[in-house]
Length: 323
Image (cartoon, rainbow, N blue to C red):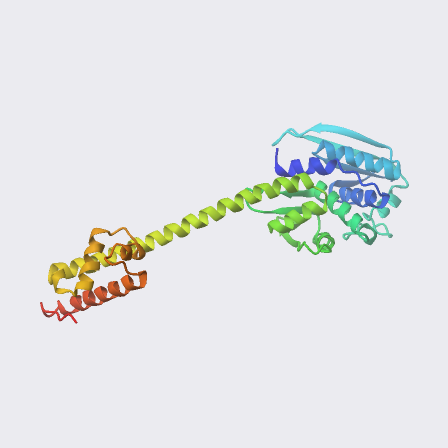
């Protein structure tokens, strides 16, 4: 079962107690999944389709409680692709249907289709929460947090997307954005903190806890990977520096002999040849008496200068003066 389905199953069990919130949620569900029909007698009907049985029951219950609609539910098996059930909630054609659709904000007062959210649907915070819950139940999806963080609600018009994003953004924790894809429009969130906030707003508390648990594990895993990568980078840096130092020392040994170096440089050079894998700090601790990392680094730089000077002079002469 997908994370979106789990979230919707949880939300489908929530029935608002206040009539205004029930109306707001039903309005969003009808907006997202509804189709207006007209029979031969020119009476308006409504059909709302969903693949989620819990959402279908919720639409049926809200419609009966608010308008006492004469509603019937039909179940149809999808023959292609996922072969899931499609639940059709049919509202019987009646002359009063246009008035109900105006109350839901689907139709304007002049009978035309509205492409924005009716203000009464989001005038209070509880109604905003209910409307957004209905919108997500109708056309929303959220990725599992193991992958990329993404929550979206698909809409049928750019104007409505902007209106929906505006309602979402009335919550300070949310910064919803609008996008388009193949003639579809959608409102989306990509920040994990905002997705968590949205799940809390619409009442998906079990989904929120599951999301947070996975996010914490994912964060810890990413942190461990970063630490390992950092350690690997530091190790590579140490190894590369050590190889360069060994190369410089061997050049001096092969051309002049290490005994021509000052004693303090001879000691560190021989220790490096014997311990090519250790860090500068560890190399200093092997000295008698021990010296600090900066002291080792200073001597290695002096050896490098002598090696570079030797390379330059060997092009024209076999003699080098060591200061």
